[in-house]
Length: 284
Image (cartoon, rainbow, N blue to C red; front, side, top):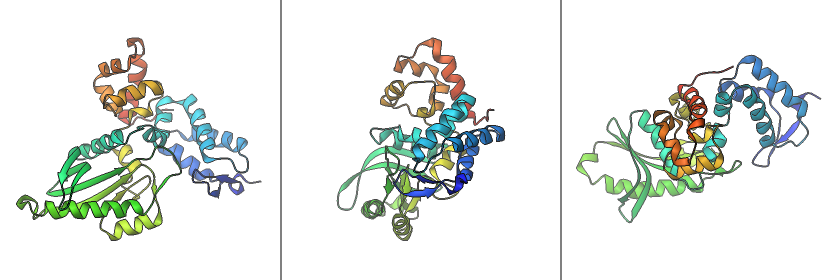
Protein backbone atom coordinates (compact mmCIF):
# COMPACT_ATOMS: atom_id res chain seq x y z
CA UNK A 1 0.00 0.00 0.00
CA UNK A 2 1.19 3.50 -0.85
CA UNK A 3 1.85 5.41 2.40
CA UNK A 4 -0.28 8.31 1.14
CA UNK A 5 -3.27 5.95 0.94
CA UNK A 6 -2.95 5.03 4.61
CA UNK A 7 -5.54 6.64 6.92
CA UNK A 8 -4.27 8.29 10.10
CA UNK A 9 -6.05 9.94 13.05
CA UNK A 10 -5.71 13.70 13.54
CA UNK A 11 -5.61 15.37 16.98
CA UNK A 12 -9.24 16.41 16.51
CA UNK A 13 -10.23 12.75 16.10
CA UNK A 14 -10.93 13.11 12.39
CA UNK A 15 -9.49 10.59 9.92
CA UNK A 16 -7.36 11.69 6.98
CA UNK A 17 -4.88 10.21 4.50
CA UNK A 18 -1.24 10.42 5.56
CA UNK A 19 0.63 13.08 3.60
CA UNK A 20 4.34 12.52 3.16
CA UNK A 21 4.63 16.00 1.62
CA UNK A 22 3.11 17.65 4.72
CA UNK A 23 5.59 15.79 6.91
CA UNK A 24 8.48 16.88 4.71
CA UNK A 25 7.20 20.44 4.62
CA UNK A 26 7.12 20.67 8.41
CA UNK A 27 10.66 19.27 8.60
CA UNK A 28 11.79 21.69 5.88
CA UNK A 29 10.40 24.66 7.79
CA UNK A 30 12.43 23.68 10.83
CA UNK A 31 15.62 24.01 8.79
CA UNK A 32 16.44 20.33 8.30
CA UNK A 33 18.55 19.47 5.25
CA UNK A 34 17.19 17.50 2.30
CA UNK A 35 19.08 14.33 3.23
CA UNK A 36 17.80 14.43 6.81
CA UNK A 37 14.23 15.10 5.65
CA UNK A 38 14.27 12.15 3.25
CA UNK A 39 15.80 9.81 5.84
CA UNK A 40 13.22 10.73 8.49
CA UNK A 41 10.32 10.44 6.04
CA UNK A 42 11.45 6.95 5.04
CA UNK A 43 11.75 5.82 8.66
CA UNK A 44 8.33 7.26 9.54
CA UNK A 45 6.73 5.46 6.59
CA UNK A 46 8.21 2.16 7.78
CA UNK A 47 6.49 2.55 11.14
CA UNK A 48 3.11 3.84 9.92
CA UNK A 49 -0.05 1.84 10.58
CA UNK A 50 -3.75 2.38 9.93
CA UNK A 51 -5.28 4.79 12.43
CA UNK A 52 -1.88 5.96 13.74
CA UNK A 53 -2.39 9.24 15.67
CA UNK A 54 -0.66 12.30 14.22
CA UNK A 55 0.72 12.89 17.71
CA UNK A 56 2.67 9.62 17.46
CA UNK A 57 3.91 10.51 13.98
CA UNK A 58 5.13 13.87 15.29
CA UNK A 59 6.87 12.26 18.30
CA UNK A 60 8.61 9.76 16.04
CA UNK A 61 9.78 12.46 13.59
CA UNK A 62 10.85 14.69 16.47
CA UNK A 63 12.89 11.92 18.13
CA UNK A 64 14.64 11.16 14.83
CA UNK A 65 15.33 14.84 14.16
CA UNK A 66 16.63 15.39 17.69
CA UNK A 67 19.34 12.80 17.04
CA UNK A 68 20.47 14.83 14.04
CA UNK A 69 20.31 18.35 15.47
CA UNK A 70 18.86 19.68 18.73
CA UNK A 71 18.43 23.27 17.44
CA UNK A 72 16.54 22.09 14.35
CA UNK A 73 14.44 19.75 16.51
CA UNK A 74 13.67 22.73 18.77
CA UNK A 75 12.19 24.62 15.81
CA UNK A 76 10.24 21.54 14.73
CA UNK A 77 8.52 21.37 18.13
CA UNK A 78 7.35 25.01 18.00
CA UNK A 79 3.62 24.25 18.16
CA UNK A 80 4.04 21.91 21.13
CA UNK A 81 6.46 24.35 22.78
CA UNK A 82 3.90 27.15 22.65
CA UNK A 83 1.34 24.83 24.25
CA UNK A 84 3.89 24.23 27.03
CA UNK A 85 3.80 27.94 27.94
CA UNK A 86 0.89 27.21 30.32
CA UNK A 87 -0.83 26.26 32.50
CA UNK A 88 -2.01 29.90 32.70
CA UNK A 89 -2.43 32.01 29.58
CA UNK A 90 -0.21 34.85 30.80
CA UNK A 91 3.10 33.57 29.35
CA UNK A 92 1.39 33.26 25.95
CA UNK A 93 0.15 36.87 26.22
CA UNK A 94 3.67 38.05 27.07
CA UNK A 95 5.09 35.94 24.26
CA UNK A 96 2.77 37.43 21.65
CA UNK A 97 3.41 40.94 23.00
CA UNK A 98 7.14 40.32 22.46
CA UNK A 99 6.48 39.35 18.82
CA UNK A 100 4.60 42.63 18.31
CA UNK A 101 7.24 44.72 20.08
CA UNK A 102 9.89 43.23 17.83
CA UNK A 103 7.79 44.41 14.86
CA UNK A 104 7.70 48.01 16.05
CA UNK A 105 4.55 48.02 18.18
CA UNK A 106 4.29 49.70 21.57
CA UNK A 107 2.66 47.16 23.88
CA UNK A 108 1.04 46.90 27.31
CA UNK A 109 0.11 43.52 28.84
CA UNK A 110 -2.74 42.83 31.27
CA UNK A 111 -4.14 46.39 31.42
CA UNK A 112 -7.49 47.08 33.10
CA UNK A 113 -9.35 49.81 31.23
CA UNK A 114 -12.83 51.32 31.19
CA UNK A 115 -15.31 50.27 28.57
CA UNK A 116 -18.55 52.12 27.94
CA UNK A 117 -20.49 49.69 30.18
CA UNK A 118 -17.91 47.85 32.32
CA UNK A 119 -14.19 47.61 33.04
CA UNK A 120 -12.14 45.11 31.00
CA UNK A 121 -8.82 43.40 31.58
CA UNK A 122 -7.19 43.48 28.15
CA UNK A 123 -4.55 40.87 27.38
CA UNK A 124 -2.50 43.15 25.13
CA UNK A 125 -2.98 46.77 24.04
CA UNK A 126 -0.78 47.64 21.06
CA UNK A 127 -0.11 50.81 19.10
CA UNK A 128 1.75 51.47 15.87
CA UNK A 129 1.63 54.18 13.19
CA UNK A 130 -1.33 55.98 14.76
CA UNK A 131 -3.25 52.70 15.02
CA UNK A 132 -4.66 51.26 18.25
CA UNK A 133 -5.43 47.59 18.88
CA UNK A 134 -7.23 45.65 21.61
CA UNK A 135 -5.86 42.10 21.55
CA UNK A 136 -7.47 39.05 23.16
CA UNK A 137 -5.17 36.02 23.43
CA UNK A 138 -6.88 32.63 23.53
CA UNK A 139 -4.37 30.05 24.76
CA UNK A 140 -4.95 26.29 24.57
CA UNK A 141 -2.68 23.73 26.25
CA UNK A 142 -3.64 20.69 24.13
CA UNK A 143 -3.77 19.83 20.44
CA UNK A 144 -7.06 19.18 18.70
CA UNK A 145 -8.85 22.12 20.34
CA UNK A 146 -10.28 24.53 17.77
CA UNK A 147 -11.11 28.18 18.39
CA UNK A 148 -14.84 28.18 17.60
CA UNK A 149 -17.21 31.00 16.67
CA UNK A 150 -18.13 31.74 20.31
CA UNK A 151 -14.70 33.29 20.88
CA UNK A 152 -14.78 35.97 18.13
CA UNK A 153 -18.40 36.73 19.13
CA UNK A 154 -17.18 37.45 22.67
CA UNK A 155 -14.12 39.42 21.52
CA UNK A 156 -16.16 41.55 19.11
CA UNK A 157 -18.59 42.46 21.90
CA UNK A 158 -15.76 43.43 24.24
CA UNK A 159 -14.09 45.51 21.55
CA UNK A 160 -17.31 47.42 20.83
CA UNK A 161 -17.60 48.33 24.52
CA UNK A 162 -13.94 49.37 24.76
CA UNK A 163 -13.98 51.24 21.44
CA UNK A 164 -17.01 53.28 22.45
CA UNK A 165 -14.96 54.57 25.39
CA UNK A 166 -11.76 54.95 23.37
CA UNK A 167 -13.59 57.09 20.81
CA UNK A 168 -14.33 59.70 23.51
CA UNK A 169 -10.61 60.43 23.89
CA UNK A 170 -9.67 63.33 21.58
CA UNK A 171 -6.31 61.65 20.93
CA UNK A 172 -8.04 58.58 19.52
CA UNK A 173 -10.52 60.27 17.19
CA UNK A 174 -8.36 59.96 14.07
CA UNK A 175 -6.71 56.65 14.99
CA UNK A 176 -7.56 53.41 13.25
CA UNK A 177 -8.88 51.12 16.00
CA UNK A 178 -9.35 47.36 15.78
CA UNK A 179 -9.92 44.27 17.89
CA UNK A 180 -7.64 41.25 17.47
CA UNK A 181 -8.11 37.60 18.40
CA UNK A 182 -4.92 35.56 18.71
CA UNK A 183 -4.80 31.82 19.39
CA UNK A 184 -2.12 29.14 19.34
CA UNK A 185 -4.49 26.65 17.68
CA UNK A 186 -6.71 26.76 14.59
CA UNK A 187 -9.94 28.62 13.90
CA UNK A 188 -13.15 26.93 12.85
CA UNK A 189 -14.62 28.02 9.50
CA UNK A 190 -17.43 29.86 11.30
CA UNK A 191 -14.93 31.64 13.56
CA UNK A 192 -13.02 32.95 10.54
CA UNK A 193 -16.24 33.92 8.76
CA UNK A 194 -17.69 35.80 11.72
CA UNK A 195 -14.40 37.35 12.84
CA UNK A 196 -13.70 38.69 9.35
CA UNK A 197 -17.25 39.97 8.95
CA UNK A 198 -17.07 41.70 12.36
CA UNK A 199 -13.84 43.46 11.40
CA UNK A 200 -11.56 41.56 13.78
CA UNK A 201 -7.98 40.72 12.88
CA UNK A 202 -7.42 36.97 13.45
CA UNK A 203 -4.05 35.35 14.11
CA UNK A 204 -3.79 31.59 14.68
CA UNK A 205 -1.73 28.57 13.83
CA UNK A 206 -1.26 28.72 10.03
CA UNK A 207 -3.69 31.67 9.79
CA UNK A 208 -3.56 34.04 7.98
CA UNK A 209 -1.28 32.49 5.38
CA UNK A 210 1.64 34.95 5.49
CA UNK A 211 1.21 36.43 8.97
CA UNK A 212 0.26 33.37 11.03
CA UNK A 213 1.58 32.79 14.54
CA UNK A 214 4.18 30.28 13.37
CA UNK A 215 5.30 32.60 10.56
CA UNK A 216 5.70 35.51 12.96
CA UNK A 217 7.93 33.39 15.21
CA UNK A 218 10.05 32.16 12.32
CA UNK A 219 10.47 35.68 10.90
CA UNK A 220 11.49 37.26 14.19
CA UNK A 221 13.53 34.37 15.63
CA UNK A 222 11.70 34.92 18.92
CA UNK A 223 11.27 31.31 20.03
CA UNK A 224 9.72 30.43 23.39
CA UNK A 225 12.15 28.99 25.92
CA UNK A 226 9.99 25.86 25.97
CA UNK A 227 11.54 24.97 22.59
CA UNK A 228 14.86 24.22 24.30
CA UNK A 229 15.71 20.54 24.54
CA UNK A 230 18.59 21.02 26.98
CA UNK A 231 16.49 22.10 29.97
CA UNK A 232 13.92 20.00 31.78
CA UNK A 233 10.17 20.57 31.98
CA UNK A 234 10.50 21.52 35.65
CA UNK A 235 13.24 24.03 34.88
CA UNK A 236 11.15 25.57 32.10
CA UNK A 237 8.22 25.96 34.49
CA UNK A 238 10.41 27.68 37.08
CA UNK A 239 11.56 30.20 34.46
CA UNK A 240 8.00 30.80 33.24
CA UNK A 241 6.95 31.51 36.82
CA UNK A 242 9.58 34.29 36.80
CA UNK A 243 7.92 35.76 33.66
CA UNK A 244 10.77 34.64 31.40
CA UNK A 245 9.30 33.32 28.14
CA UNK A 246 11.88 33.81 25.37
CA UNK A 247 15.05 31.97 24.42
CA UNK A 248 16.50 35.39 23.61
CA UNK A 249 16.07 36.52 27.23
CA UNK A 250 18.29 33.65 28.33
CA UNK A 251 20.83 34.27 25.56
CA UNK A 252 21.07 37.94 26.52
CA UNK A 253 21.30 37.21 30.25
CA UNK A 254 22.55 33.68 31.07
CA UNK A 255 22.34 34.47 34.79
CA UNK A 256 18.58 34.03 34.49
CA UNK A 257 19.18 30.28 34.36
CA UNK A 258 20.08 30.40 38.04
CA UNK A 259 16.43 31.21 38.77
CA UNK A 260 15.69 27.62 37.73
CA UNK A 261 18.59 26.31 39.86
CA UNK A 262 20.52 25.27 36.74
CA UNK A 263 24.19 24.64 37.42
CA UNK A 264 26.84 26.71 35.65
CA UNK A 265 28.27 23.51 34.19
CA UNK A 266 25.19 23.28 31.95
CA UNK A 267 25.14 26.95 30.90
CA UNK A 268 27.21 26.50 27.75
CA UNK A 269 25.10 23.60 26.47
CA UNK A 270 21.87 25.54 26.99
CA UNK A 271 23.26 28.78 25.58
CA UNK A 272 24.69 27.02 22.54
CA UNK A 273 21.28 25.61 21.68
CA UNK A 274 19.53 28.88 22.47
CA UNK A 275 21.87 31.04 20.40
CA UNK A 276 21.59 28.78 17.37
CA UNK A 277 17.82 28.87 17.70
CA UNK A 278 17.60 32.64 18.15
CA UNK A 279 19.87 33.37 15.21
CA UNK A 280 17.72 31.19 12.97
CA UNK A 281 20.76 29.15 11.92
CA UNK A 282 20.15 25.96 10.03
CA UNK A 283 22.00 22.88 11.15
CA UNK A 284 22.71 19.57 9.45
